Amino acid sequence: MHHHHHHHHHENPVAEQALNEEKSASHKLLDLGAKLLQDRSPIKSIHQHLVGVHFYNGEPTRQVIAHHFCAHLNDDFHQCVIYDSDKPDAKLIGIEYVISAKLFHSLPEEEKKYWHSHYFEVKGAVLRAPGLPQLAETPVMTHLANTYGKTFHTWDTSKDSLPYGPPSLMMSFTADNQIQKPLLDQLYESSSTTYSDTRSVREKIEAPPKSPDADQWETGKVYQLQLQRLEGELRGFHHHLNENPADPREPVVGDHLRGTEEKVVSSSDALDRRLVKPAEGVHVHHPQIDDQFTKATSISSPHPHSSEKL
Image (cartoon, rainbow, N blue to C red; front, top):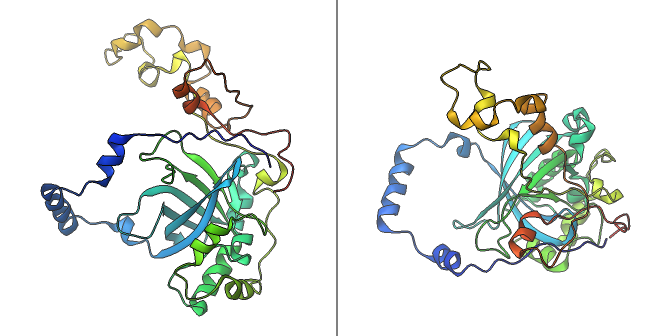
């Protein structure tokens, strides 16, 4: 799969220094107060640690280790917070929603573009539940094999000192020889079992085959997020308030836009049209365009050769 790499390493000495500094004494005291007095119910319901590898959709060789900490709302729906390590100072890099096959099949076609399967991650042993003995891990993996994930990463900590740009849609592996060797080694470095032993256990797990509507990158349909500037009629708050022009609650900021409302069926429809559709179309780099602009808009898009298998 040939894709242009649009990611730029952001040098930011101020951020690099700031993120390495210790917490101040006063900050530690505030943290302690919060810890003692505040309830963290949603966090307390997180009970499961999974580690796997995601890749940036459109850039299959840009792969990152993802430590998931998951809460299960029920059998059909899990939600995970993703960090770059399992250490206390781990950085928050993304989120993943995990749904059952039943829920995946209920999704509209347009929505399925965002989702990846977990079938191979489980069977191919590229997903682990660290610390769980095999006896406890196998039922967890059996359940996950027939689920689907929607993942966004917000920060590439291997390259950037701060979270830059829009979130990225992530995908996961669907076949052998996709994961890079250093990441596979990292996945198993703290494991009590080897990759090959785990793999022989996982291959015995029975699961229904994955839906062909997930992992659409495999057929060359590659989607990525892009920041879009919205058109003029969406400025201000005037169109969310009472339609009566004499309404005193209508802010003055809307005055210069009065009369433009008819141009859109309704502002929320306009937002739907602009935001829901995954961005498509090849982004061309123009040397004369300022580098910052390129960073804000660059996007990995469907490419003539993208139907080739990895």
